[in-house]
Image 1 (tube, helix red, strand yellow):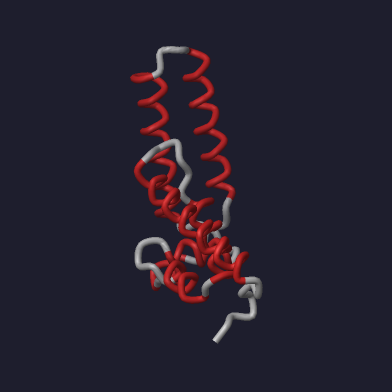
Image 2: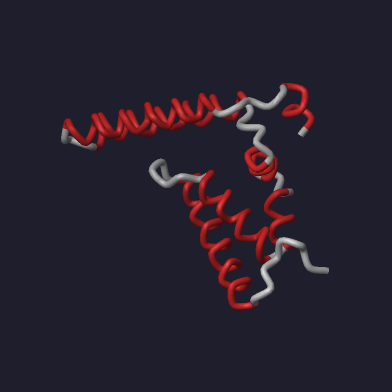
Length: 137
């Protein structure tokens, strides 16, 4: 049975599936590389799958590792406190080590620290789901 959101045109539907999988792969790469974002790619993947494949959308939003976080974001509930702390900690470790151990140009180091500060502010401004709800997931 087709989803009410699934696009009728098969060319567009298959294009969305391809974009969804590409963004999923980029999101997984973002888990490993500090400069590549993870969340935007996974959210884009969910949006593409919603319009193209209910099976892939269900798989992604029910995934044991990051499905709950995608659902939180889609439903406007935000990011759990533990995940915010993890994201910010890893972000600062990677950016500071890059800025002071790898990069030898002062202005590039300043840009890296500025990006880390702006991303931290963005993460901290996201809503935090209720503690009971996030622990039950």
